[in-house]
Length: 106
Image (cartoon, rainbow, N blue to C red; front, side, top):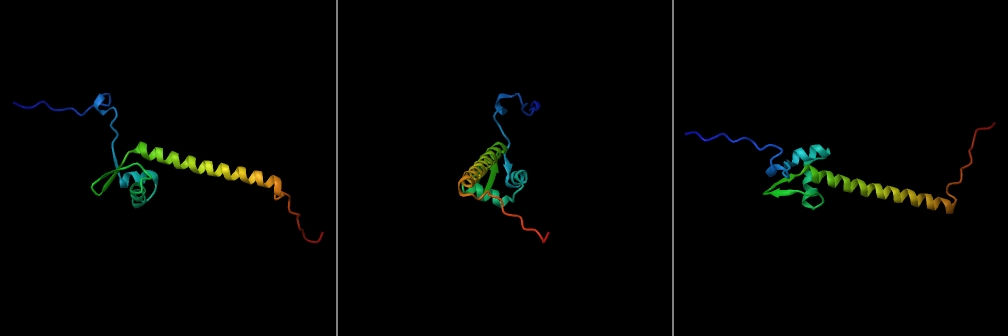
């Protein structure tokens, strides 16, 4: 008697609904365009969500995306704050006054 062949689970299968394949350090670093050791250091420091299996690190693409959004919003907020401070400072200290143009002997 032969055993029936098992089919791989379909995407509609409830068991695979929440499953997200894990990326190794090389694959995840390639997505982010950074060195794998840099990504491993971020994972070790807890800056990026990752799973350590023995000495190996595994990453979910969704976790990497959340991390990118987090750092992008952080830098965006710093840039906005810096620009608003420059505008506010320039109103009161006169630093926006134009510098006289020096030209050759006309």
